[in-house]
Length: 410
Image 1 (cartoon, rainbow, N blue to C red):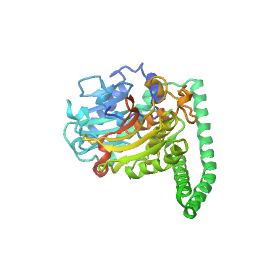
Image 2 (tube, helix red, strand yellow):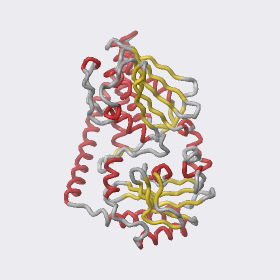
Image 3 (cartoon, rainbow, N blue to C red):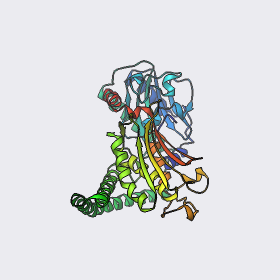
Image 4 (spheres, one colour):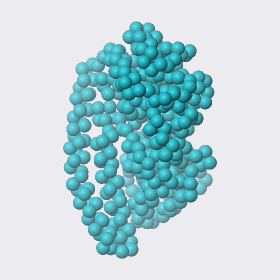
């Protein structure tokens, strides 16, 4: 599993990073001055203007760091670009998110990190201005963090000179702004019918019994999920950049899986198939976005319904490594075509004989994006017993209290 999360809008972000290719490392006098100021303000030996590229991070300016670039695997800055807030890690050894990170366990053995994201005028986060030390430290004073953030804005303004926008770019920004207004209006209009559906299905569930009650309960659960999804899109989405942020919270993984199973069980029965739920005793509390992760697992479930066989299982387990695995297995052949092509949007299986309902090919790509935003991955495999689709989340997400303590310290 890669040691860094991937932003939801990674392709668009990479296109912006590519426009900075004419920035020559260590040659801009403003950037050189800024990394020197960071060392003084933060009292650290090393400071970097880090640009997070596709497979690497390269340094537009650096103070007391021996190399001009590293693999992205060695980039804590790849975490700093996920959210607009400054990432503060007083001691990487005390933080379950980073204690096993390659740049911590290997040279140069980073122990202290503070990184303010570099946000261009377009809204894209291309890297971070960061301060490093090789011993654990106390959390910096608020004034020092504020100064780092101010310097990161100057870095962004300097880089923007290399990212001069054309008229087409400005037109695209206007288009994105219009889409944002439309999304807000559509979200508002969705809420009224969703409220009616949710309330009516709950009332029906209270009056009915047996299979009818299960159907009403599943409808209420699905309506609540859709309502939460609309709220999340409005709260955590940035239409100007196409980015989506995680609304992380400590939640019950078992409860989430039960909700997905409740919604899917009747759909499978209607199609003449079955969906079983299996969870081991280790899986439980975790740190995740309950709305988006549930949506990703639902995508795996619907893929099994559309392209799978007649018997499916939704499995939640925790590996001996601590990683959380959520897997949907069925006895079918899975989507037609190569597995890599299944992760391309609008790639729909052509084998009509194996499909029990329609689909537009967005489920698996969406599940992959959400898994990668969580720092995890999606694995698709055709095996002798059928098709397996598994989301794996890093072990630190199963330690919500430890992460909460580390974030509080940071």
